[in-house]
Image 1: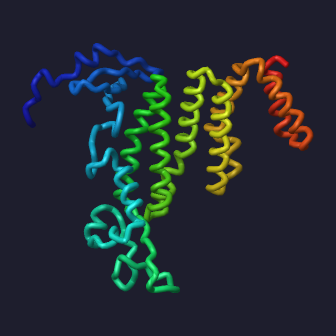
Image 2: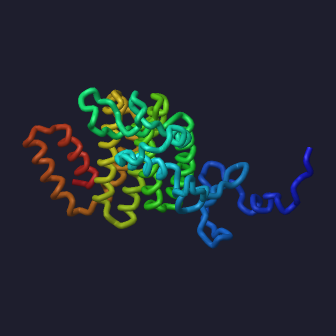
Image 3: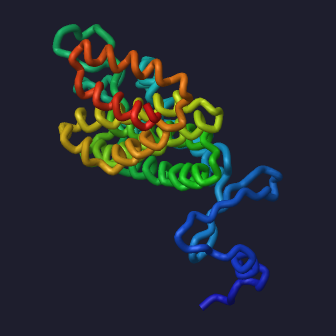
Length: 291
């Protein structure tokens, strides 16, 4: 057994100075030794500290601000013939398949029609790379949850948009079906969190109409996701859709009285077009406005 570390490594004074409160997310911003702001989250057994900008742990994989941006850059390079002239070993070590043709020349892919036509090979992410991308995404998840508590809506929008890009990258370029599908399971949650942040920022700017429009866009995105995954019936019962509907119901009364005229016009137009489902929604909105 090794000797214990010096007493000044003990975190007890810091933990005692910031007691954990069950049932809530304990978040604060402090200034780091580098004079940059840090986000701290108090857990029951300790504290998580994250950078407020860039990758939460402050690392720069491959010289990029995140692993995602590194692989996005490599995906962009897939359109450049020079990209395919690296060695197979180098491509494999980067978690990227070369997409080489059977002839062994990675600069060409045999399409069966024109052997002289250059066809860019696709990015091919192996299981280890996808796992590393998911682990990095988890860091951003912890940060955007904390930022939502702090009502830093712009930060939440930035980080949730970024994690949606991770899901897109893995869905399009993962070599294994399981890796392509894994982040799709959490896509609805990320969409919901991003929508809440956009609506929250609109409310902070005192534009409730824009907040409602953001929620409507979020609901459309959720519906499109479930349709794309072949489970359209899951949309109505999803907790994310229910959360956004509740948010929308809470936002409607915040509309100024001047919005009544617009709602009435939309109601008449919906009835004229025999869109009775929309008409019923608009009637409910008018009732909530006291009309």
